[in-house]
Amino acid sequence: MKYADRMARLGSESAFEVLAKAQALEAQGRKIIHLEIGEPDFNTAPHIVEAGCAALRNGATHYTPAPGIPELRAAIAHITSTTRAHDIVPEQVVITPGAKPIMFYILLALAQEGDEVICPDPGFPIYQSVVNFVGAKAIPLTLREERDFRFDVDEFRSKVNEHTALIILNSPQNPTGGILTRDDLAVIASVAAERRIPVLSDEIYEHMVYDDPFVSISEFPGMSTKELTIVLHGFSKTYAMTGWRLGYGVMPVELAEHVSKLMVNSNSCTAAATQYAGLAALDGPQEPMHEMMAAFRARRDLFVEGLNRIPGISCRMPRGAFYAFANIRETGMNSRTCAAFFLQQAGVACLSGASFGAAGEGYIRFSYANSLENLQEALERLAMALRSR
Image 1: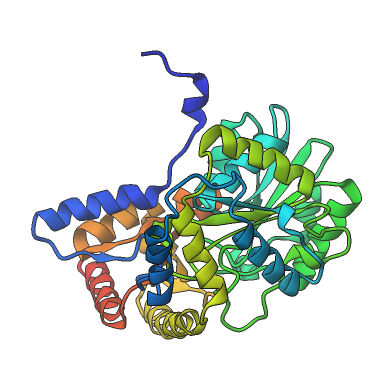
Image 2: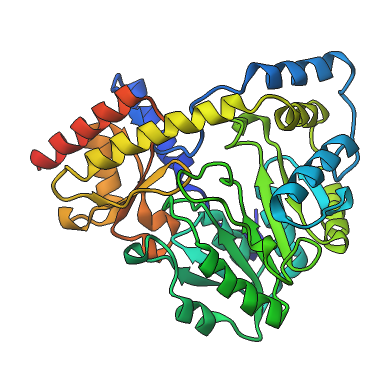
C-alpha cells in the first residue's frame, strides 16, 4: 500500500506511547506510578454524568448541527463574553469532539505551503505536528527556564515576518506549567494587530492557575475573537471530562463558518449527549472544579519541593496546569535516556522533555495528577534510583 507523503510529516503524542510501555511492565507484575498522562485523576462530577445520561434517556441520540447545539453555543458565548471583556455571539462558537480538532481545522483554514506558524518550544507536540502536516513551516519560539518559561520579547519580534500566517500561544502551558504575563501578551498583541496576524490561543488550562489572574490575548485592542484571536478551549481539564471528548473554539464568524464546513466533512457533529453534559458543567455547581484545583495545589507544592531535594534535579514552581517540568541536566543523562531510566529503574512513568520540542532537551515532564501518597512514593523511588546509578 502506498501512503501519501503527508503522513510522514505527522507526529505523535509520546504520552500514549509511554503509557503503553508502563502498562506492559504492569502486566509483568511491576507497580508503576503514572505521572505521564496529562489528565485529571478525578472522575467527572455526578451532576454532569447525570445530565449526559438523562440526555440519552430523553432521546439525544441523533445528529446535531455541525457547529453544536444552540444551547451550548449560547452558554459558551455568554461565559466567554463575561471573562474576555468583549461581546461574543453564538455564531462565533464551534463545538468539536475534543479540543484537538480546533487545532486541525484552524491550521487547515489559515496555513498553507510556504507559510510560517510560530509555536511555543517546548510546547504541546501536536502544534508542530499539524503545522508540518498541512505543509506549513513551524517556527519555534523558545520558552526559557530562566524567564519562568516565558519567551524573549526581542526573539519573538525577530521571528515574525511577511510569511507568518498564525501565532500559537498556550498559557498556562503544557509541558512547563508556566504562564505568559500581561506584558508578554501585550507585545504579541501589538505585533499581531499591526500585521493582521491571527493568533490561536490555547486556553484549555484557563481555570488551572494558582496565583496570578488568568489573562487572554483576546482582551487586548484589535485582538478580540471578532477580529484576530481564536480561543481554543474545552471541558477535559476543567471538568475532568477527558473521555467525553468535548472541546470548542471561539473565533470570528466568517472563520467559524469555514470550521463548521470542516466539521461537516470530518465528524459531522459532536455527540449530542456529550454536549448536554457540557451544558450542565457550565451551568451547574463549580465546587468540584475548585476542590480539584485545591488538591492540585497541594500536590504541586509537595512534589516540586520534593524534586528540588533530589540531587541532580531542579524544578521551577509551576504557575498553572498540573505539570512539573524538571531540569535533569546534572544527572548526566539526556531527556529520553532519563525518562526510560525512571520508568525501568524507578517504576515512575514520565515524559522526555525532548518530546515537546528541541528546547525541551534536558528536562522531564511529570504530571502530578496523582494522589499525594503516590507522589511521595514516586519521589522516594526517583531519589533511590539516582543514588544507585
